[in-house]
Length: 371
Ligand code: IPM
Ligand code: MG
Image (cartoon, rainbow, N blue to C red; front, side, top):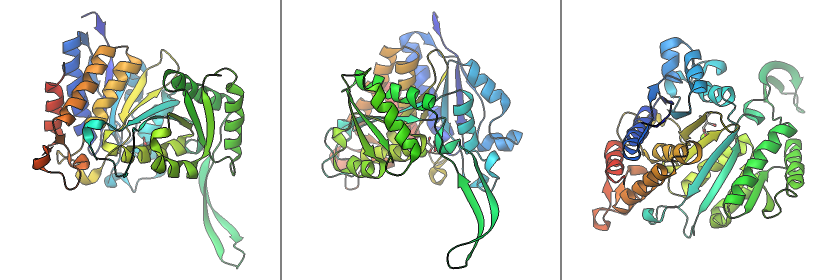
């Protein structure tokens, strides 16, 4: 086969192995149809790696990721590992991969698919089709953090006790490269870019605004506006269809993307692409977590993971036809009425042509619908 890629698969914990397994199945099926070889190798990260090796991100996993063309990640974490000290928690695997692979640009598209009918909890959602561009390797997630015992007191004499702190810090270079990505995507879409920040309070946000304003000169066709993050969360509920591209910091992007997932039906639908500079390997993962409460029950929605494969093929590997085929297959499967529990709207039933399906059934139906 002429086109061959080196894909690292990291199933992780909780529902990760189920949803990532679905993604791998779809990738293998679509690759046969479109004549490329995905060469998938599996590695451990997260809680399962703590169990096997004592660390959340084994060196061999990061090395394989760095040598790959792309990484497909499931999810990590679970209550079993919640008591472990901060540096060895499963989540450090994701943060370590993002940082170690220099994946500073996280793309989280949220589209309300018409095939899902009235799945949005909003009364009148309109045509939601937005893209969150989240900074992924800086800000409060990676700033100085710690805790210490304080001898100070509050105004009323109460002892402060232990103090914990996290630091939000961004450099000009980090801000510029992510806002540029925001402008670039806006150029390819509807030419609207919203910078979401907290510039009325945070010094970092004011630097973001200043840099964004300077960049408007290079992208005169893009209409740039600014929203405070609290206001943005409100506007995403009241007028979601008016957003095009949102660019924002690591933590704000994390929070707003869950909101974007819910208004378009379920976090179980939203994929993400994490990219570095051109030519570097990318990482593709659902925005949802490991959902330990439904793990191992064949109930999880595999669509976020499957659409992560679609993003990988479209944005990263240049396999556009295969990517389109996946998207069409997902849409057709939903149009045919297949629903995992998270997207089976209360009140809908067999009478409306809706069929409740398992993770595996949803995946098999999508595979069968690949053209
Ligand atoms: C996400 C997740 C992660 C994050 C966690 C698991 C560290 O919530 O990808 O949105 O906060 O980035
Ligand atoms: Mg999140």
